[in-house]
Length: 273
Image 1 (cartoon, rainbow, N blue to C red):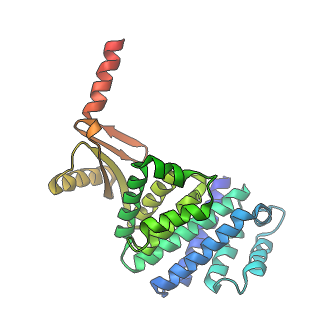
Image 2 (image 1 turned 180 degrees about the horizontal axis):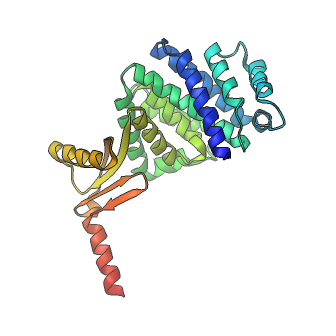
Image 3 (image 1 turned 60 degrees about the vertical axis):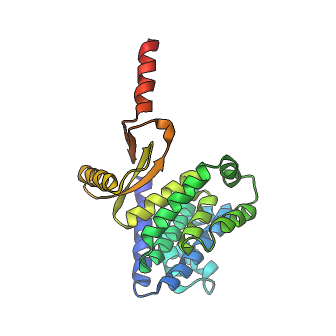
């Protein structure tokens, strides 16, 4: 029940933001996103503030008033109204309000990319960056280390991505470094890929193959998965010769593993018995 109540607060805040930025430019929405994410940084550093903004003994109007008193003149009116709407809702844990503000900031970045018609690029760039990180053990360890100074990790991501990706991609990668929604870095990137796809009304299918698929094979697989899930599917393909042959597809919690490697492992287990 508590989760559904916080989701309702999130939805109401999202509607407030959408209404307030409907005629704004992509740059204006991106600026608003940065303001929201700056507030998320404040909440991350101030546990007492998180507790105050989720204190059930205070009325929603009181909690909204606290946000207005703290942020008035420091953020744009639409951001102020959005965050006041958010904290007027109920949250069962102080961490939930931080997660919700982070989500609002990420959604706002995606809205800015959508206004520039760049969502598909952002989605693919985030996925490719995740592949680069997972394929480099040293880089993955460095970026995923919560004990390493965040400034150093942000600088590394900026060196890797600045000028090579959409601005929203870089900013979302920086959000992942903070542990989006309490996740690790690589899991945060995956979640952000999925949120980007959802903005395009698409499901994400993670596909592993031993060798690259032809364009015709990709189109056929996407069409088949779209029929199964009842919506367009965005394929994220990873080429891994170690699976020998066949294909593995993961959509959400569903896994379809038709790889030769899986069959060999199953045979080994059968013989072992």
